[in-house]
Length: 174
Image (cartoon, rainbow, N blue to C red; front, top):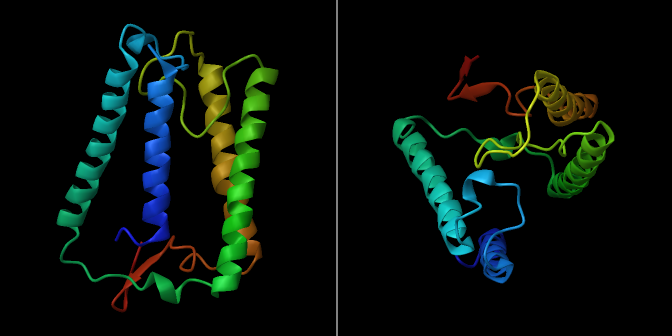
């Protein structure tokens, strides 16, 4: 498993994040009002605990679905060259969407509009209005669901090819 490039990349990113935390000194440069008095080493342990929680949830899902037949996702995938090109375009699109979200948030006078709502894990030091929530929901729904769905449907992908429809062992559900 350690020979796989994606595992090696994850390890490098993890080590880089630990180095970032160590170099940050007393606290990390984030708006985490519930963690201001906590040393960066404890903040790092908190982040690792969250990763362990995610791994626990994955284990529960694997346990619950252990008897189900495995879907052949490779049969739905395009040719490797197309796959690689589409992946690079989607990564570039996600980066642009993040940058636009930061700009949009600053333009309307709130925090950056991003993939998750600010303050959901560690709190936020400003008041969040209902308008802010609706703006975040609308932006994320359009940018991360509607536009990619429309783009891939326009490229000829079916709901099944996009893994939005499940079919296992000849049965169709949903």
